[in-house]
Amino acid sequence: MLIYDLFRHTDRLDRYAMAESTPYRYAPASRLHEIKTLLASSGGMTVYEIADRFGVSVRTAIRYLRALGNAGEPLEETLDGKRKIWRLHPAARRETIALTTTQMVSLFLSRRVFDFLAGTGFKEDLDEVFKRLEITLRKRDYDTRNLERKIFDVNEAPHIYADRLEHVDDIITALLREERLRVTHGSVGAYKKPFVLEPYTLLVYKKGLYLAGYSHHHQSVRTFSLDGFRDIDRLKKDRFDYPKDYQPAQLVEGAFGMIGGPRTHVRLLFDAKVGRFVRRRLWHPTQKITKTERGVELAMDVSGTVELTSWILGWGSKVEVLEPESLREEIAAEVGRVASKYDSPRLPLPPSSGGRVLA
Image 1: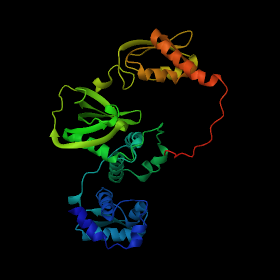
Image 2 (image 1 turned 30 degrees about the vertical axis):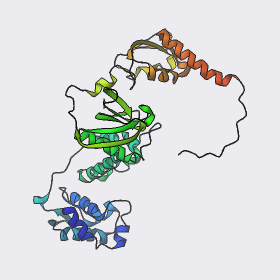
Image 3 (image 1 turned 90 degrees about the vertical axis):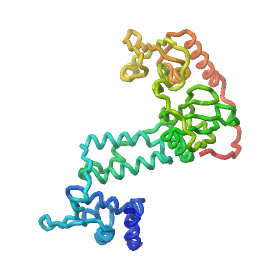
């Protein structure tokens, strides 16, 4: 009701006043809610500070204060020397959040990690939360100024989820309400066989989203990539009992990534040139790193080697598989196939077909 009243009283603000607020995409009601939150802080604000904060004229800042007063907000003004400070009446104030600068930076860094979710409700909601936090925090502007440029997360080939908004929303809703989903996935019947899935966990792995749950088709708990879903229908009110003994850690226990398999003891020898980089990372919970005359040896017991194989190949000539022999042979065979593509002179490239470029 408050938001409605604020909007009703601000629709009289002239178009020029709202045009000045283009850096903010929020409606008048949201703008006034932000100002109300600021005035509820212990220090209060002058009209000049309000204008500077929102990039509007002093005249427009005064209109905002009048709109809040017309909406019934208990505003009060006090003099601090020659400065007129506007505050919300103490009885209407809410406690503000107090964070240190390092705590604010830590929180902002956690936000940057999820930039790969751009285009989904996740990202929009997260941005909204930080906007509210930034208003509520009892910190000076210099603590948060230019953080968008001072902390930047480089996403390596993130997944594109801009067109999966409804799927993400259905998954989250079903997870929270413990409702079943009817889905089609490329790994089951090449999208031709719908099946029922009880969602247990939404996983984030290598800038991608995966959904783990009980598959009625497989009669077991399985993990599916979000990219592989074609259709997702939430079965409203078709609830299931979330298993008490289930733990997400079980999904990747012992695996070198998401794909499991037989338990395998692996020994890898890295060149001394990359030794420092290898030693300073936790690659696997069972890892044992030893410095030798030839370089750095990494030993670990993994469940499955599917993802481990591609990881080893990514090191090129800087690593050698010592054990097991089967993995050594697999890597050698793959390296041979790659080398064969470069053994003979390259054939002339065919003319461009003028096909459609995939964005």
